[in-house]
Image (cartoon, rainbow, N blue to C red; front, side, top):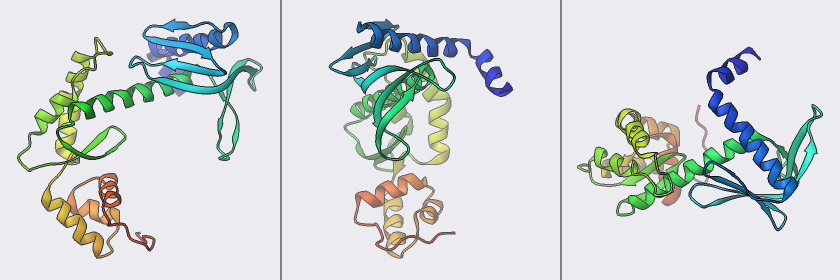
Length: 231
Protein backbone atom coordinates (compact mmCIF):
# COMPACT_ATOMS: atom_id res chain seq x y z
CA UNK A 1 0.00 0.00 0.00
CA UNK A 2 0.87 3.68 -0.13
CA UNK A 3 2.02 3.77 3.52
CA UNK A 4 4.42 0.87 2.98
CA UNK A 5 5.89 2.42 -0.15
CA UNK A 6 6.27 5.79 1.60
CA UNK A 7 8.14 4.16 4.51
CA UNK A 8 10.46 2.30 2.14
CA UNK A 9 11.16 5.47 0.17
CA UNK A 10 12.05 7.26 3.43
CA UNK A 11 14.38 4.43 4.58
CA UNK A 12 16.37 3.34 1.50
CA UNK A 13 19.37 2.04 3.49
CA UNK A 14 17.19 -0.38 5.46
CA UNK A 15 15.47 -1.60 2.28
CA UNK A 16 18.86 -2.07 0.60
CA UNK A 17 20.05 -4.08 3.60
CA UNK A 18 16.97 -6.35 3.35
CA UNK A 19 17.89 -7.40 -0.16
CA UNK A 20 21.60 -7.72 0.57
CA UNK A 21 20.67 -10.23 3.28
CA UNK A 22 18.15 -11.94 0.98
CA UNK A 23 20.82 -12.38 -1.70
CA UNK A 24 23.42 -13.59 0.81
CA UNK A 25 21.09 -16.25 2.25
CA UNK A 26 20.16 -17.58 -1.20
CA UNK A 27 23.80 -17.63 -2.34
CA UNK A 28 24.88 -19.52 0.79
CA UNK A 29 22.14 -22.13 0.24
CA UNK A 30 22.63 -22.54 -3.52
CA UNK A 31 26.43 -22.52 -3.71
CA UNK A 32 27.22 -23.83 -0.21
CA UNK A 33 29.82 -21.11 0.30
CA UNK A 34 30.19 -18.57 3.13
CA UNK A 35 28.93 -15.08 2.28
CA UNK A 36 29.85 -11.90 4.16
CA UNK A 37 27.60 -8.84 4.42
CA UNK A 38 29.26 -6.14 6.53
CA UNK A 39 29.82 -7.81 9.93
CA UNK A 40 27.39 -10.70 9.28
CA UNK A 41 28.38 -14.11 7.94
CA UNK A 42 26.04 -16.54 6.19
CA UNK A 43 26.92 -20.20 5.69
CA UNK A 44 25.37 -23.63 5.17
CA UNK A 45 26.82 -26.57 7.06
CA UNK A 46 25.54 -30.00 8.10
CA UNK A 47 22.04 -29.34 6.76
CA UNK A 48 21.74 -26.01 8.58
CA UNK A 49 21.75 -22.37 7.53
CA UNK A 50 23.72 -20.26 10.00
CA UNK A 51 23.70 -16.48 10.29
CA UNK A 52 26.68 -15.45 12.40
CA UNK A 53 25.93 -12.23 14.31
CA UNK A 54 28.54 -9.56 15.18
CA UNK A 55 28.85 -11.11 18.65
CA UNK A 56 29.87 -14.45 17.12
CA UNK A 57 26.61 -16.12 18.16
CA UNK A 58 24.76 -17.96 15.40
CA UNK A 59 21.12 -18.06 14.38
CA UNK A 60 20.22 -21.50 13.02
CA UNK A 61 17.68 -22.60 10.39
CA UNK A 62 17.01 -26.31 9.84
CA UNK A 63 17.23 -27.90 6.35
CA UNK A 64 17.11 -24.73 4.25
CA UNK A 65 15.92 -24.91 0.63
CA UNK A 66 15.17 -22.58 -2.23
CA UNK A 67 11.47 -22.72 -3.04
CA UNK A 68 8.82 -20.72 -4.84
CA UNK A 69 6.57 -18.17 -3.13
CA UNK A 70 2.91 -17.45 -3.93
CA UNK A 71 3.97 -14.76 -6.40
CA UNK A 72 6.07 -17.18 -8.43
CA UNK A 73 9.39 -15.80 -7.20
CA UNK A 74 12.25 -17.42 -5.29
CA UNK A 75 11.88 -17.88 -1.56
CA UNK A 76 13.79 -19.58 1.22
CA UNK A 77 12.12 -22.31 3.27
CA UNK A 78 13.34 -24.15 6.35
CA UNK A 79 11.88 -26.48 8.96
CA UNK A 80 10.45 -25.19 12.23
CA UNK A 81 7.36 -24.82 14.39
CA UNK A 82 4.60 -22.96 12.59
CA UNK A 83 1.42 -21.18 13.64
CA UNK A 84 -0.31 -24.53 14.18
CA UNK A 85 2.38 -25.48 16.75
CA UNK A 86 3.45 -28.33 14.45
CA UNK A 87 6.78 -29.02 12.81
CA UNK A 88 6.53 -27.84 9.21
CA UNK A 89 8.32 -25.95 6.44
CA UNK A 90 8.37 -22.20 6.98
CA UNK A 91 8.95 -19.52 4.37
CA UNK A 92 11.20 -16.52 4.83
CA UNK A 93 12.94 -13.77 2.88
CA UNK A 94 15.26 -10.80 3.37
CA UNK A 95 13.13 -8.54 5.62
CA UNK A 96 12.22 -11.45 7.92
CA UNK A 97 15.83 -12.55 8.23
CA UNK A 98 16.79 -8.95 9.04
CA UNK A 99 14.14 -8.93 11.79
CA UNK A 100 15.78 -12.04 13.27
CA UNK A 101 19.22 -10.42 12.99
CA UNK A 102 18.09 -7.20 14.69
CA UNK A 103 16.31 -9.02 17.53
CA UNK A 104 19.26 -11.39 18.01
CA UNK A 105 21.77 -8.52 18.12
CA UNK A 106 19.55 -6.56 20.54
CA UNK A 107 19.49 -9.64 22.77
CA UNK A 108 23.30 -9.83 22.69
CA UNK A 109 23.61 -6.15 23.63
CA UNK A 110 21.23 -6.69 26.57
CA UNK A 111 23.22 -9.73 27.72
CA UNK A 112 26.43 -7.71 27.58
CA UNK A 113 24.73 -5.03 29.70
CA UNK A 114 23.69 -7.71 32.19
CA UNK A 115 27.30 -8.85 32.44
CA UNK A 116 28.48 -5.29 33.15
CA UNK A 117 25.80 -5.10 35.87
CA UNK A 118 26.55 -8.51 37.39
CA UNK A 119 27.36 -6.82 40.70
CA UNK A 120 23.68 -5.81 40.88
CA UNK A 121 20.84 -8.08 41.97
CA UNK A 122 19.16 -8.62 38.58
CA UNK A 123 15.96 -10.54 39.30
CA UNK A 124 14.52 -10.57 35.80
CA UNK A 125 14.33 -8.97 32.41
CA UNK A 126 11.43 -8.21 30.07
CA UNK A 127 12.40 -7.51 26.44
CA UNK A 128 14.90 -4.61 26.76
CA UNK A 129 14.09 -3.87 30.42
CA UNK A 130 16.16 -5.08 33.39
CA UNK A 131 14.60 -5.53 36.83
CA UNK A 132 17.02 -4.85 39.66
CA UNK A 133 16.51 -5.07 43.40
CA UNK A 134 18.57 -2.34 45.08
CA UNK A 135 18.71 0.36 47.72
CA UNK A 136 16.72 3.54 47.17
CA UNK A 137 19.91 5.61 46.96
CA UNK A 138 21.35 3.75 43.95
CA UNK A 139 22.02 6.12 41.05
CA UNK A 140 19.86 5.50 37.97
CA UNK A 141 22.35 7.55 35.93
CA UNK A 142 25.25 5.29 36.97
CA UNK A 143 23.27 2.20 36.01
CA UNK A 144 22.41 3.72 32.62
CA UNK A 145 26.05 4.57 31.99
CA UNK A 146 26.98 0.95 32.59
CA UNK A 147 24.15 -0.25 30.34
CA UNK A 148 25.46 2.09 27.65
CA UNK A 149 28.91 0.48 27.49
CA UNK A 150 29.78 -0.75 24.01
CA UNK A 151 30.43 -4.49 23.53
CA UNK A 152 33.91 -5.19 22.08
CA UNK A 153 32.27 -6.70 18.97
CA UNK A 154 30.20 -3.54 18.27
CA UNK A 155 32.86 -0.98 17.38
CA UNK A 156 31.31 2.32 16.33
CA UNK A 157 28.16 1.82 18.38
CA UNK A 158 29.47 3.66 21.47
CA UNK A 159 28.50 7.26 20.76
CA UNK A 160 25.09 6.39 19.33
CA UNK A 161 24.30 3.99 22.17
CA UNK A 162 25.35 6.40 24.90
CA UNK A 163 23.42 9.23 23.26
CA UNK A 164 20.31 7.03 23.06
CA UNK A 165 20.64 6.07 26.72
CA UNK A 166 21.14 9.70 27.78
CA UNK A 167 18.37 11.22 25.66
CA UNK A 168 15.72 8.51 25.68
CA UNK A 169 16.34 5.59 28.05
CA UNK A 170 17.20 7.53 31.20
CA UNK A 171 14.16 9.89 31.10
CA UNK A 172 11.92 6.93 30.28
CA UNK A 173 13.23 4.88 33.20
CA UNK A 174 12.81 7.78 35.60
CA UNK A 175 9.25 8.50 34.42
CA UNK A 176 8.21 4.82 34.42
CA UNK A 177 10.07 3.95 37.67
CA UNK A 178 10.39 0.43 36.29
CA UNK A 179 14.11 -0.30 36.51
CA UNK A 180 14.47 -0.53 40.26
CA UNK A 181 12.32 -2.26 42.83
CA UNK A 182 12.82 -0.94 46.36
CA UNK A 183 11.91 -2.64 49.64
CA UNK A 184 8.67 -0.68 49.99
CA UNK A 185 7.47 -1.78 46.55
CA UNK A 186 8.41 -5.39 47.25
CA UNK A 187 6.46 -5.30 50.52
CA UNK A 188 3.47 -3.74 48.74
CA UNK A 189 3.53 -6.42 46.05
CA UNK A 190 3.66 -9.21 48.64
CA UNK A 191 0.84 -7.73 50.72
CA UNK A 192 -1.46 -7.06 47.77
CA UNK A 193 -0.75 -10.38 46.09
CA UNK A 194 -1.50 -12.35 49.24
CA UNK A 195 -4.81 -10.47 49.41
CA UNK A 196 -5.63 -11.87 45.98
CA UNK A 197 -5.10 -8.64 44.04
CA UNK A 198 -4.27 -9.08 40.34
CA UNK A 199 -1.07 -8.02 38.57
CA UNK A 200 -2.63 -5.04 36.80
CA UNK A 201 -3.99 -3.47 39.97
CA UNK A 202 -0.73 -4.11 41.83
CA UNK A 203 1.21 -2.42 39.02
CA UNK A 204 -1.06 0.61 39.21
CA UNK A 205 -0.77 0.75 43.00
CA UNK A 206 3.04 0.43 43.13
CA UNK A 207 3.98 2.42 40.02
CA UNK A 208 5.76 -0.60 38.49
CA UNK A 209 5.05 -2.06 35.06
CA UNK A 210 2.69 -5.05 34.95
CA UNK A 211 5.41 -7.28 33.49
CA UNK A 212 7.77 -6.34 36.32
CA UNK A 213 5.14 -7.30 38.90
CA UNK A 214 4.46 -10.61 37.14
CA UNK A 215 8.16 -11.43 36.97
CA UNK A 216 8.69 -10.68 40.67
CA UNK A 217 5.65 -12.75 41.73
CA UNK A 218 6.69 -15.72 39.64
CA UNK A 219 10.20 -15.68 41.09
CA UNK A 220 8.73 -15.74 44.58
CA UNK A 221 5.90 -17.90 46.00
CA UNK A 222 3.32 -15.24 45.20
CA UNK A 223 1.35 -16.75 42.31
CA UNK A 224 -2.32 -17.36 42.99
CA UNK A 225 -3.69 -20.84 42.27
CA UNK A 226 -7.05 -19.58 41.04
CA UNK A 227 -7.22 -17.58 37.78
CA UNK A 228 -7.37 -13.81 37.97
CA UNK A 229 -10.69 -12.13 37.21
CA UNK A 230 -9.70 -8.56 36.50
CA UNK A 231 -11.89 -6.22 34.52
